[in-house]
Length: 312
Ligand code: CP
Image (tube, rainbow, N blue to C red):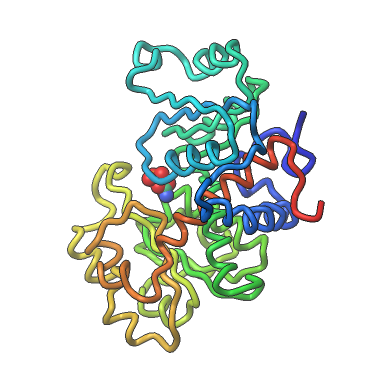
């Protein structure tokens, strides 16, 4: 049965309406409390089998999904490329169809190829949740970022959020852009032109070439990791130079006209895109993002399984 709220799958925020995004955030809010209990478990997904198919490295997303599944009482299995028959050349779809033959209900997939989650969703009956596909989207990260911002700022309509750094390679940036714009926020990006998509000027966002200007404008900065593993060279002169020109430092924030919420999806390159005294400073919500990630993933799994939103 498809979710009356989300349909069969969650593949990205581009295809969700503002109402669907709000329903997920509203569902996640009350679910946060479950993680604060001594016994962190409710029976909402009892009897459901979920496979976490992680073909790319992950700490936060993989563990967060696993906690979310366990706290909702689902049965879970983790499959990685290493140690599975993918390493012998089995295709993604064959792997998933063999898992389906063992009667699963949902697949959470992280994959290095943009579009891999949709490719799979179109070919299997199980529900598919995109846990990050190449440089395309990372919808649950976008949702947890929205929840963290909403916790601090309330309604996001008209609030000013700047996404800083390696936007070009960032699926987090894309999901944030879609989500923030749908909720009515003003969105900007800031970074060297070599790390911004060519079409950035048509995306309806402000573009800052200087981090100082972004800091002057923004109420929140979402600072992205320089994805060195996706760069073949030539994007930036050196990490030191990047930090000198675009790094979010204490000195730069001290000159801001207001307190600025500091976000980072992780993993961080400390001393490159963000300095340690900013990452660990009083305005950082980086660990709140991680905490909210569990509630967002619980909400997504619960809704996809047919659960009703609060008051629905
Ligand atoms: N934010 C994020 O996706 O982190 P991981 O790569 O550790 O999952």
